[in-house]
Image 1: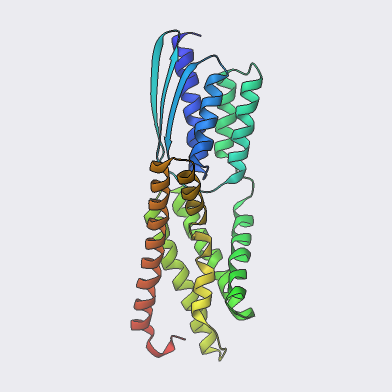
Image 2: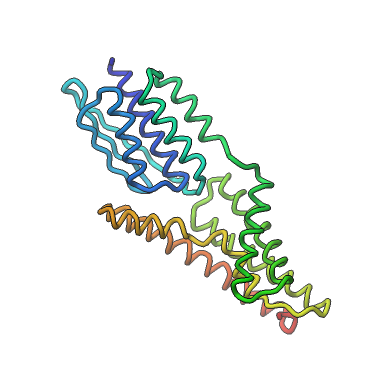
Length: 263
């Protein structure tokens, strides 16, 4: 391969790793995919160091060293994209597909989504509302959590599309979840319906609880990727603190403004 072909291959491999990281893949998966892609084209001495916010690559080809750093600033969850990138890397390795063709497919994967927005909103609401039943909530709390979760998910999806930071997405998500839950609960009080506002808030924020980040932190730490493990742990802490701040500020503001109307 010519020098420019090596550079194109390096850029493609790092982009594939970044797409994996952007959608919640584990560190070992991103490293393995990058190394697999590069090794399939005869590149030797592939060194890939991956953390959730960056990919550092160094390769050797015909006694020349090439290196590249790929920055990642987006953190989300889309397991279907992870699966499709893995499939693309296997297809690329097992065929004579050109880097240009692979890049087109990778960009299509990056832009694709398994479900449309309305489907994601619906099932975010349904999934969150079932948590109210775990805390002995009734049908009123179930419905309130569903409405609040749909509104919260819509707001966080909008902020994600705007490339808002992880902290800002979750603090605004906490504010919206608490505000929607409070509004629903106050309406129930005015109608003379008994409701547990706390259970509704618990259900509403469940779509933002950092379960994947915590799981990946444990997985990376067990694998010996301690830097990534600490990074994932920090991510989970940031999300949790942002949620707590958003909900707490909204609750205190509502108590001051609504007084006796608060359930």
